[in-house]
Every structure is written in C-alpha cells, then in structure tokens.
Length: 350
Ligand SMILES: CC(C)(COP(=O)(O)OP(=O)(O)OC[C@H]1O[C@@H](n2cnc3c(N)ncnc32)[C@H](O)[C@@H]1OP(=O)(O)O)[C@@H](O)C(=O)NCCC(=O)NCCSC(=O)C[C@H](O)C(=O)O
Ligand SMILES: [Mg+2]
Image (cartoon, rainbow, N blue to C red; front, top):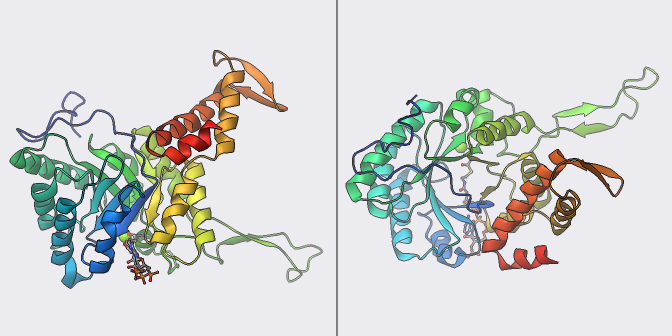
C-alpha cells in the first residue's frame, strides 16, 4: 500500500489529481446495454435523462466475436451523444486476464476518456488488481491530457475478492464503489444455484415439528442467500467512503422479486442496482429513492430533536441522537435526488 502521504498523488506525471472525496451523484440504476447490439444501442440517446447511469457493457453477455464491435460501438455512442448533466456514462471492461482488456482500457481512455465517468472492473480479486488499473489509467489520462480522473468500480464476484473486499474498497482514491456480481460469485464459491441473483426456494428455514410428527404441515420461510455478502460489502464501502450496489437480477419477468431484492439491498445500505432491461429501470428508481412518508417522518424527527441531542417521544416512540442520524441519512439522500429529479423534489415538498 502507498503511504498516507502519497495516497493522493497522481500515479503518472501529467495525470489529473485524484479526488479526495467520491462525488455522490445519483446512481440508483446502472443501466446495462450492449454497444454491439444495434437495436439496443439505438435506444441509448433517448434514455439520457431517464436513467442515472448508462453503462456500455463489454464483458460477459457480449459474444466473443463481438468484443471489438462493442468497443467501437461504445466509442461511437459516447462521441455522438450529449449525456447532459444528470446521466453518467460508465463502462464495464473485460476481465483483467482476458485478451481484450488492454485494448478496452487504452481505446476507451484515449478516445472517449473525457466522456467516461467510471470504469467497472469485473472479477476483482484483491488490491493488486485495482493498483494495476490505477497506474494504467493515470498513464493514459496523462497521455491524452484529461483534466479529471476516471473513477473505478469493482465487481465482487470471486471468493478471494470477498475475502479482500475491505482492501479493494480502500485500494485507490479512484475507487467509486463496489457491486455484487451474484452469478460469478455463486459459481466461484461453488454454490449450487443456477440463477443470476435473487433467492432460491430451497434456501429456507422450517417451523419446528409439533407433537413429534416431522411430516405434519410446517411453514417454511425462504431466506436471503445474499444477506451476508451484501452486508459485508456495505461495511467495506462505508468504511472507505465509497458506494455499494446490488448487481443484476436476471429474472426480468419477475418484477416483484426484483423489487424485493433491490429493496433489501437499499435497506442494508446500497445506493443502487443494475438494470438489465428497460422494465427494471423504474423499479430501481422507486426503490432507491426514499418514500415521501420516510422523508416526512425524518423531517418530524429532526424538528422534534431541536439541537440534535437528548431523547424525545414522538408517536409513542423514543427518538434520540442515533435515530436522528438515520433520519439525516434519508434527508440527505432526498435532498440530493431532488436536485436532479423535479418529480421527487415535488413529492418531498408535500
Ligand atoms: C435480457 C435481454 C437479452 C432481453 O432482451 P430482449 O429479448 O430483446 O427483450 P425484450 O424483447 O423484452 O426487449 C424489449 C425492447 O427493449 C429493448 N431492450 C432490451 N434490453 C435493453 C437494454 N438493456 N437497454 C436498452 N434497450 C433494451 C429491446 O431491444 C427491445 O426493443 P424493441 O424490439 O425495439 O421493442 C436484454 O435485455 C439484455 O441483453 N440485457 C442486458 C444483459 C446484460 O447486460 N447482461 C450482463 C450483466 S449481468 C452479468 O454480467 C452477471 C454478473 O456479472 C454476475 O456475475 O452476477
Ligand atoms: Mg459476472
């Protein structure tokens, strides 16, 4: 690890100074598209302003013989599209051990580095992967004279990445956030699931048997396969001042299950999730924006707490410094989202 003194120094002569605080821009949905799919790519310009993040995906889900086309497609879209003030452009490059990633990074940074906000790096195993990308990005940024650093987002999709998540989250000032990659992580852990995110009906607890008859009607309760993983990722991110995200939910038709999975992640501390299909965009927008009721309640707690210390009763419940802090998290998020979303601003005003 670099010393504290060197941590915020550029890693190449002429590279932009690293950020000391990760910009807290809305990123409720990271909307994936395949830039080599002409039909999908054609829809991207019209999505500007309707999603927080548009992500040109170059990795899994893009066929091996379409990798160059995807990279070239992303360059063309970035050059021809005005992303406005409120929609960010991200990309997911190929894995660091793949034959494509070096060209992904060199092409994208030199051709459209001024348009790219964040580069998502898949299958990150440890801090060494982030250090490699960090130095290479600094060299490329210096070569083309970028004035702001491109940030880096790691996907947690290996057991080793999970074990090292704290050091990954703190590996560079470029670290913007971490997403869960449940499909690759499940395979790497040798879990016995076959889905892209979400639960499994076999992962359950069962009510105790009554009267010794183990076969008599006993209620079962499906459990959350991802609770430990998401909670650990959230802690690693919060401890390092970066943002955690739930990743993909592959059952596109199950909009209810998707909403539940996203909400669990939101309640545990995640700021967004991936949308793989247009049907998931509004789900993410709804879930990752606090409800009007929560905002109104948070305001009442804040008002009733005066200088923010001590304890008061509100609606029969004790509120104190700590419950106020939770309310301030909600109010800060509502305030930030209101700045870019007039509908939410109106909703929260009521
Ligand atoms: C999942 C899909 C393959 C479904 O596509 P399709 O069969 O075309 O769906 P529809 O017919 O319902 O589409 C309706 C129209 O919407 C357009 N469309 C579909 N998806 C998108 C999109 N993401 N962005 C923009 N537009 C989209 C279609 O073209 C249709 O248009 P029209 O015919 O004119 O009405 C597809 O949605 C898809 O490929 N999505 C992205 C998948 C992806 O990125 N996967 C990778 C991320 S998940 C992952 O990698 C796992 C993770 O790493 C882990 O380890 O867990
Ligand atoms: Mg993956």
